Length: 591
Image (cartoon, rainbow, N blue to C red; front, side, top):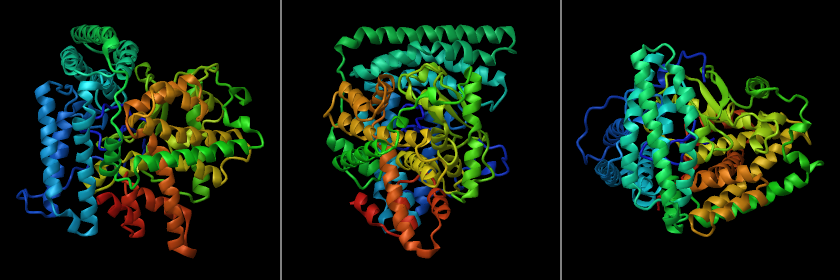
């Protein structure tokens, strides 16, 4: 999964996503999705109790939601749909100072001596603040990455279109208001970009020049029933926004020769992020070694297939080639039910009855430069609508793109990763947590680790026949995700160039150049996101063995899965403490 949102205070850890990341038809429990943090009487700062922490967290989430309105819209909170983020230098500095002040306050709380559950919440909230502070201190994205501003434009509109949360007229009015603000916001961005990185600028230019269909076609679906004056106002604002976006790209292009090619954060900063933001009990060297070990394993497992060519998706082997885009999307989506039936029959995991629809949609052109395989958009943490989407690249039966070829031959491995039991189900469950700090946490290592683990779990429990295309695809998917680790670590610690990263994806990961280039671009743009898959899967595999040893004859794999995902998207060092009552990993990251 990859969720396209600029790295900011709105992202608790890796993208995504949020990250970076991210459907239910029975919404009897939907009130839980939008449940606010419990009302708590104001606590006096410095009292050092858990009520103080919860009050700080409640106030922080409210502050963050208002200061990052596009992130709010994307997460299903539509209070500020008519705003863009204020990227004036003064406001950027104010936000950074606010987060640092809160972080110092939370660090000063005696959370290390609190009861287990309270201590966990203290650690989680502190790591959320650490993630935001790291961006302003180290990455300084507003100064280095033009994608911050192009993403604000694309996500500013996309977040209003992806769900019918209100009438077309109200969403159109919000879109028009945002369009009018884009020229000013982009001008702020140009002033802020004091040390732009060439790679990021090239990606921003590509996104800016691919944004027209989102604005001219997708957006205009809201305008069909508008009064003429409102429609004309939207068109005028749209055209002026597009002129500003293309001008932004043109001026960036002229500056390319003077830009630094890439600016790695360095090993010390990378290790800081692993420990203080991800709460991961591994350093960069250990993560890189894990990547190499897993890459060797999955490369070998491919070779041990009776027909190793099955690891390279080939539409020619498929019995049914969809004739067009609509048929392709429908066929892709339709395979989910057989997977659900298999999971229920084998009692592999409890599927909540509040899940809504999980839909497959076409990937907007503006997001292709850094997401060649598409991305997941789960129900947001504030979403009243439980539907989730996976955006897949435009259908082309002749495409060399790995994800398109895989989707034609057998979409189930990727479908399981993105849908059920993967991201859609896991994140929907996380949205129902009543502990607000845990509900707000979005640990990418857990999220991606669970989805990747699910791919192989379904294979090993018998969903896919031996020597099948699905089996080969799963091995290739783990192989190239293992290659992602080497790319991420070596790019951001300064050991590799971007071209070395692309070549590694092709040679070691087995990807075509188009997919390899997009993967490398995504790794460069979102530090540590690409390590999440294999590192998280490895932690979950390690945990299941220990869980089984503890349970003995009472072990049941379905119970393990339920226990694992009922706690939300938390670091696996924390989950290990919750499930096994073993704080060894937690103590390691807190030293």
